[in-house]
Image (cartoon, rainbow, N blue to C red):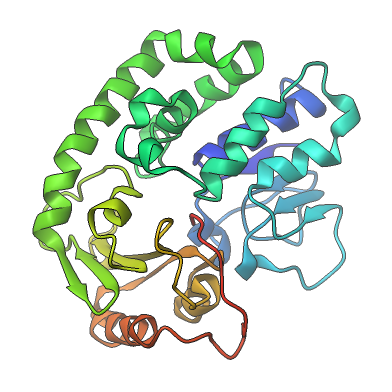
Length: 308
């Protein structure tokens, strides 16, 4: 039996909660959603999958992504909810030996992108927000850090976590990256209608930074479309789309839209990946839908802001 989850903040908290609720020694297998969607993940009987697409071999499944709606009965919980961690917390409510309400509440807020302007502009003033920015699946070699965070979150308070030397180092790095990221956004973002199109493909290395910053920098836009080359396979393009968390007037269901391009996500945010030779066809098609800003036939109601 393993915990199989995604290396983002929601996934880290999912792993911590599952260890607390079931077995503190459960191994964690970190997986990217695209790999699960494309059948590249070997799920074993007994595995508990969280914050990822469903797999028929898993013993339990917890998820909240619009595009991952199950097509069969399963053990666990699937709902349109702010975070997958929140579903796990409610499902195993009687198994936790300490009050984790604050951790889950903050995870809900971060994964649903329910952030204030101050939290976006100055995450260093908000411990959970800053901590969440240190977790990224971009670098597989960060796996020891993801495991370290799981242990830290279950053994101490947020103050204890933030005092850890490795956490502090990574938080300092995030603050520096965010300062530089603002300049990258200004240089590589073009405003088309109410869409902020950020194209990093010309860069040898894609810059990392605060994914919500674009919404405060370009308040007239309702959605961002970010384009980059994959880190491990430069022959693949990754497109991320997110509703503005401040100008909530995007009517396109992002998860439904990107499920057409080997991706998916929430109504308010998602991503997809495809071979670079398909970019000239797929990128204009995705952008055209965003520019028209009309509900898709699959989803007649407007989506809410969120993160992929």
